[in-house]
Structures are given as structure tokens and as C-alpha cells.
Length: 339
Image (cartoon, rainbow, N blue to C red):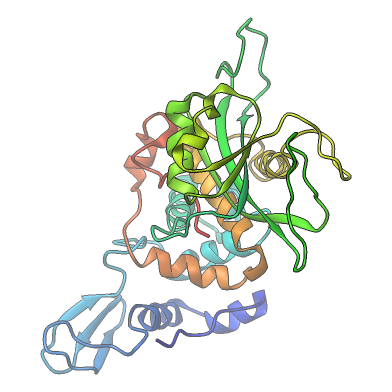
């Protein structure tokens, strides 16, 4: 399978995609990486019908819409604007809000920018993603506005949305992650691998355990704090590391790697989106954060990755987005994040 090149700079992008016709050619190259073959007769030559996003077999005249069954299905927006959205949201570190994108692309309505970007976020989840393994940290955090005093105890959801996250701990060559009986470990030369995030209704085992089972491979060392929602982790096939002490090497507090990811997430939501993320769409933004983090070492290939995933299935419509249920379940791909 031979895939086309992808742009490595903004100048590359301008040169590769000067107009919609170039975008159409790129989609054709991705949909048929081994060359076009007519589904009806098997012939490998076609005409491209202008202004219709359709190709026609030269032999049997079977017509195929190149965007059918993709995230751009029946779109009236220029393909070039779709490509810009995918490039900007996948390669620029802070991403882009719908308001910014509307202004940059000259779109008349914010609803168009909002829907387009959410459709792209839906393509940031790989259904065939690999489970996390090795050593991971798991914890929860609150996302949202200031939490006013309500007298509620424990990890309630008053005033905020609860997010559970898991991150792989990776180490440089020749280093090992070693735990002792008090939950201490050597942190030198350890860095964050892939991350997964999900918005949950509460921090009970009913919500936390399915999240682990869907994201973490059996036999993985799972480090958690002493919260009761993790009490059965060892019974689920994991090596449970209960961390109640401070780490010994250059770090304070427990589970520093997942807390660092939570801090980055909140900084991004506040900086790019000014903290204005609706409850029913939070999962979509978590998907975007995870995708960008997990592909941070292959930033510019991420554009092609989003497009390839987007060619595999349709995404939420405008009406579905605005009628999204609480937490967006059943609408935004969940669990989150391609890796």
C-alpha cells in the first residue's frame, strides 16, 4: 500500500492543496492506495466529474462519490476548508476554537465552523487502537468553572464535570521503573506515553473499572491512589500499585504524570476555548487533546491520519450535535483517543 506524502509545513500545505480539485485527488489517493478499482467491473481507469466530487469508471460508467460514507458526507463546504481544519486542529499545539476557525476561513456562520471541527474530532478516535500496557497511572480530576461550596463530601460532581484519565509511563533506554512497598518509584528519565481520557458521571467502581478494562491491557501495572473506586483493580487482572506516599526522586505528591496531563488539559481548555466547553461536548475535546498528545512526536503526519480515519465513517450531524445528550454518550466516540 502506497500512501501519498503529507505536508510538513504550512508552505507545503499551500503548495499541495491550492484548490478543491487537489483535495479531491488526495482523497482518491487515500481511498484507493493501490490504485482505483471499480467495485462493479474491476476496471482501473476513471474520469473525474468536475463540480460533483464524483469519479466514473471508464468501462461500465459506475459513478462513485469520493466523499460518500466519510466525515465529509454530503457536505456543502469546500473541501479545502475541511483540509485546513484538519491540518490546523491536528498540527498546531493549542488547536483552534470554532470562533477562530470561522474568522480564519471566512465562514458566514459559527455553526458551520462548530460542526466541521466536531466532525474532525470524531475522526480522532481509532476504533482499532492498541491497549495501554507496561506501567500506567490512573486518577480523576474535575473540569469546569469554580466549584462553589455546597457542603458535599468526597468526589461529587457539584459544579464541575469529572474526568478519569490513564497515562502510560515510558522510560529511556536502559532505565527501569521500580516500585517499592510504599508506592515509591524512580522517576528519572520517565516520560508520558499514550493517554486516554473519559468524562464520567461519578468516581465509583461502576464507572472506573469499565474505563480501565477498555483501555488497559491485562497484566499491566496500574498505579492509583487509595480511592475506594479502585479497590477491585487487582481482581480485574492488573498488578495494582497503591500509591499513598510521595515519590522519592525529584517529585512531590502522588501520581505526578497523570496530574501533569490533567494540568495540560485544563490549561488548553482555558487558553484555546476560554473554558467554554459544554458538558455534552466535553468528550469530543478530550478526544482531541488525547490525539494531539499521542501523536506529538509525529505532528505533521497527524493531518493524514485524521483524514484517513475520517474516510472510514460518517460523523455527527449539526442537528445531532445540538441535541446531544448529557456527557455526549452515544454521539462523541467514547472511549477516547487514537494512539
